[in-house]
Structure formats: structure tokens, C-alpha cells
Image (cartoon, rainbow, N blue to C red; front, side, top):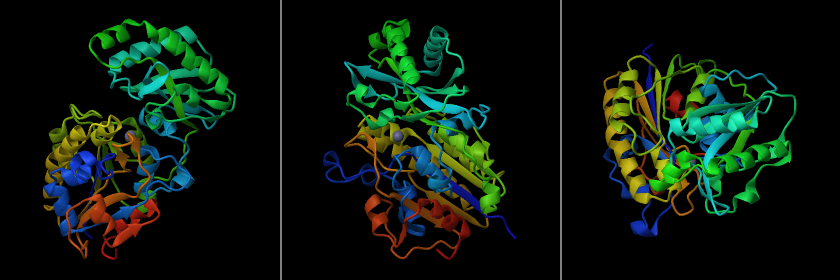
Amino acid sequence: MRTMKYAIIIPDGAADEPLKELGGKTPLEAAHTPNMDRVAMEGRQGLASTVPPGFESGSDVATMSLLGYDPAKYHTGRAPLEAAAQRIPLSATDWVFRCNLVTVVDGIMKDHSAGGITNAEARVLLKVLAEDLNLADFEFYPGVSYRNLLVYRGRHEFDVQTKPPHEIPEEVAAKWVPKGTGAAVLNQIIDRSRELFARHEINEVRRENKMNPATQVWLWGQGHAPAMPKFVEKFGVKSGCMITGVDLLRGLAVLLGWDVHEVEGMTSFHDTNYAGQGKDTAAMLDQYDLVLSHIEAPDEASHQADWKTKIAAIEHIDKYVVGPVYEKLKTFPEWRMLVLPDHPTNIATRKHGYAPTCFAMAGTRVKGLRPAPYSERNSAAGDLKIEHGHELMEYFLRGGNL
Ligand SMILES: [Zn+2]
């Protein structure tokens, strides 16, 4: 039997709603995307609900779904997935919290990313905080940019409600601080960071350069380590490779038993090396049966309500990633390709949306009934609606009988 080659491209948060600024078009409709359109027209498109009822819309839940794992069964929090990316050893009783660096001005949550603070700056600030607090059983782990982790290895249990900072732009931050059992120590950490960071020279320099300062940490996304079966056990695809600029997806790859490939100059913003990522994604298909390539830039642009950058990001993904990967796939006897945002991120609200996401799929034995360019509207008018997002992977891998 010949080995089928699979490629999955995730333009994070690319789906959206019609915008007045775009004459009633969505960013995906406004963007020039000949390659995504080809995937949809030569194959088929449809909708998949990647955020099950009762879950917060986020890449942790939505990506788990589209990888074929039901979040209701496997999701224990976002932070434990990122801990897996950093290969932080966790015992069953350890807790992991996402520790964002954020910008709060006059009590208002202005920026969940502290202006896309650099890794080096984040490291310094977290070190200052950790040394000052000197709390037993808590360990800070710097990640990428504003995305850091706090691990608790003590004996206390937590039952806290927390809030993702990207879900509360322009809201009063104090309204959303951790609440519930164990919240006191978390708020102690948050409050101390505010005092320590206020006059820190890193923030003075950032303010001078008109960049958002990291005014404090924000703790959320907590959980214990998840127990997920390996992808090969669940779906029989022997080898997988993840290419992504964010730890969350690296972590999912580690838990799935996939390799992680790093691309020179790859970031989670629009300054990323699109061409390098496209080239490497295509090259990895020689070695792996399945390659997943994730680009965070459209999501970050959406959170900043920057529709121009969002459109540019989508066009770059189309040209430099989808195009070359599609061409590469066609050199294999059997192949299949899937393009889908994990979830919508809406420019109008700067938040993740809950609408089903739109996917386009092409390749061996994939044929649609109504060829149309790739968009939210055309996907909704398509002939395939997947109510349980985690079932999409099975459809994608199984082949002809969609
Ligand atoms: Zn997002």
C-alpha cells in the first residue's frame, strides 16, 4: 500500500465576520487567496464546530478538536499543553498556570501581549518577580514573548476561576482577577508584579519607544497534565511533524508523539518568516506522513483590530505556505490537504468567535459538489457540516467516503 501524505495548514484566527471597512466582506473574502481558493474549488469546503458547548473559544480547545481529540475528554487547561512544549516534567498533582505579561493602564486591560514583548525582556521581568517573591513550590518558566508559565508543585489544591486576558480587551482588569479556592496566593503574585514592574527600566524604555509596557503578570489557563493517546495509536498515521511559532501547538505535538520542526525567523506575528515556513513545510513532507503548519499572525492581528495586517497575513500564508505545499503534495501519488483556521477571531470585538470554522480540503478522492472560492460564506453553503469538530480528522484521513 502506498503511503498517503497529509498536510494541514492552520491560519490561526483567519475566519471572521463581514466588516463595514471592507464593504461587507470578511478579511478572508477581501484577501487575494488564489491557492486557498484552488484547494476549495478542486476539493471541497465546509464548516466544523471546533469549540464544543461550555468551552471558551481558544486555540487550545479548537486545535485539540481539529487534531481529532474531543476537548470534553482530553482538555485539562491551556497551560499544561504549553508545559508539554517546554518538556517541563509534571507529576499528576502539579498545577500549571499561563503567566502572561500584559499591559493594564488605569485599571483597563489594554494589551494581552504587552506589545509583543521580547523573550529577553520577559525573562528579566520574570526573574525579578521570582526572586522578590521567593515563594516555595512556585517556579516561573519563560516561554515565547508574553507567553510564560508558572508551575506549582506544592500540596494545595486550586479551584479558581480565571480569565484569558485576550478575552477582556478594554475591560476593567480587577473584575477578572482569579477567584475561588487558592486565589489569594495568585493575586499576591499578580499584585507584586504590578509594584515591581511599574518603574522597571525595561518598561521605561518601552514607553519611550511607544511600545506597550509589561505592567504586570496575568495568571489563567490552569490545569493538571492531560492524558492523551498518541496520534499513531488513535489514527494509524505513522509519523507527524508540527511547525508552529507558539508553544501551545508544540505542546500538543509532544503529547501526540510528533516531532517539532523549527523554522529560522518564525514568530507568532506578521514579521514571521512565511517563505521559510512554506519551504520547510513542503520539505518535511518527504520525511513525514503528516505535516501540520500553523501560522499565528492572523489571530494576533485580529486581537489588535488590525484588519489590514490580518488581510496581509492571510495573503502571505496563501502565497508562501499554501501555494508551495499544494504544489509539493501533487508530486506524491496519494495526498490530501486541509486548510482551516482553528477558530474565528473577530476584528470587531478583538476576541475569538464561537461560529463554526470554515475548512477547505483537497486531494486524493476528495471531491465537492459546488466549487466556489474559499470563504466563510461559501463554506457555510457547502455540503459538509461537522457538528463535532474532533470528527473532522477522521473524515480527512479516511478518504473517499466523505
Ligand atoms: Zn487568539
